[in-house]
Length: 77
Image (tube, rainbow, N blue to C red; front, side, top):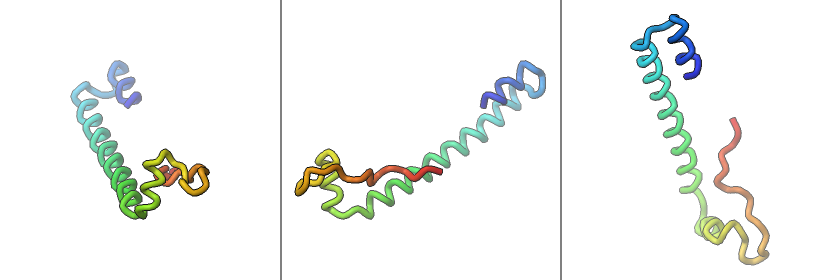
């Protein structure tokens, strides 16, 4: 987006072209966010009741009072 904004005053693209390109980028970002959310939801749906209870109890296992690993963290890309 910063390249698009910089290209307008330089005269490389017209504001109307910049708006169209920005819409395409916005659509891509939204699709990416939805896909990421779908992945996270699938991971949550696969958790057992015991794992969900540990998460709701602040991430600690009741039996040992040790922290639970980050079950809902997204893998780095």
